[in-house]
Length: 473
Image (cartoon, rainbow, N blue to C red; front, side, top):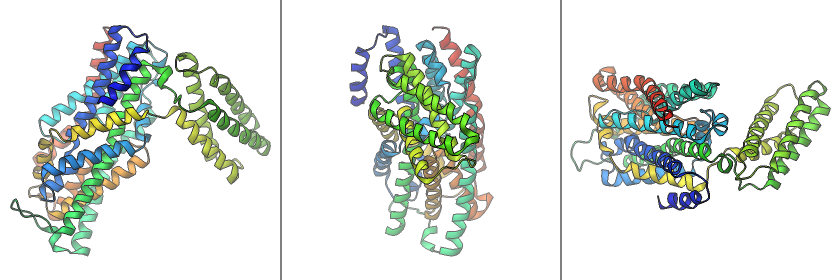
């Protein structure tokens, strides 16, 4: 947290914000830190429930261990998921409207998410922080579109993310069943199916190492996926309030950007000559590059208009490069493809970025949150999903499935529900062990009800909060 204030306080001194606006700005920033903190203790159970209930680690060791690897996951996990979250809302429209509008949207998203997360945590119901936040962003986006017109939600991105959230628990359940059957009928290592009874009934060294390893992986991948959502929200706040400074990565030198633009232009000119039917299309793309070069020299950390224009041009150019590289109708040799691939990556870094202090702040908030309030959800996952105590095989199975599913989702830049993946993994392992009668129907109904209600409740809360805050801008 000292890092957070060290970066924010000097920055506030350089702005011309009024005192009320500074207060709102700080509330927004603290709210996103609070959201990630709540996310930490709400979702800690996903990683530590199995090691605690199989006696592989004591809570006093498991919680800080998980917290550390959550921290490392955020810090080293990249920003692909964060940028996916950022693209759910009408960022371009926000940059052209008064700052108070952005504040309404951001606060509505954060407070709706925190309220539902705290409510489900208090009741001990595993609930997806991802689901909650996506619903809140859709609700705030809808309210935004009612007031200001246009599309307040990127429905293409929302569909992509929604599909990921829906399919991940189904995949988790199925994979857990298959893996559990494999362990039962192929490996047949009887020690894996032991249910610990006493305080000192600990797993054998090999099994214990496997349980701790899978706990570590789930913690790390949880940080790399869920932590990035906090990074995305923090960047949304910074861009909404100070677009000229944070809408572009000003640390990348103009000379480097110009080099990538020139290389892209050369490839487009070459493709225009070898693909005569597409000559007009490439002429338009070359003209876009020419305009981007003009705005490259005009953009600055204080010029909102030209910075906004340049961001739009770079985003459009990156999308065009992707289309050219994926087109089957173009004669694109390996050399030119490599140049375009490099330009696409480098130009993406101009608009898709997060300062290191933002990543560190979210990392610390998630790591600290992991160490507080963990017990309510752990008890539900460890004791109440099935009608019997977790055995070693069930713990290992659910953690392997969760770690692999979350890790792959992070690699593809898709937010996924850690809670739903692990809960469904435990359910799948229980079913494979003793059939569906081995499941606790009451707990599953509560989890299922929370899953069904999360989207409509968070959408509604965000809409109402946006309308309430909008009265005061």
